[in-house]
Amino acid sequence: QVQLVESGGGSVQAGGSLRLSCSASGYIYSRNCMAWFRQAPGKEREGVASIYTLRGRTYYADSVKGRFTISRDNAKNTVYLQMNSLKPDDTAMYYCAAVNSLCTLVPGQYNVWGQGTQVTVSS
Image (cartoon, rainbow, N blue to C red; front, top):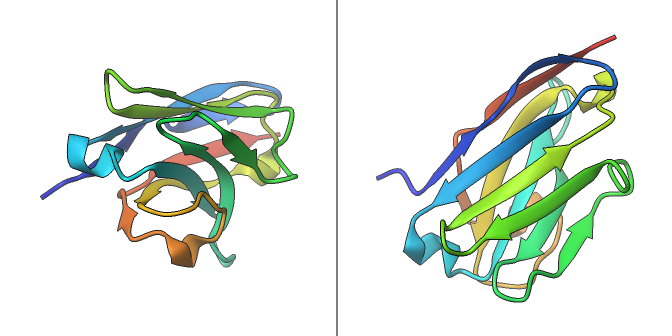
């Protein structure tokens, strides 16, 4: 049973923009916190941004502050990640995750994951 579905990945040149979407079942969306993570080949999965789905409070990794924006549409049970000023270092598989707990950027604290969407940024 698919519970989180990501979309919006693709290939862009440095400086470009992409918008990722994560659609969740209602049960999953009500779990309080949703987040985006990414994992590049040979690297550990790292947190990018998280958001409390009810209150809307957000958190960002230092590496994306000022460039990425996480937001949500509660009517659609969907969380977005707007990525601007993309860099080659942003190239990774991006994953959506959910947890019924505090919003953090620690992958191990999330218990529901999507399949991921690939983002490739060329120089």
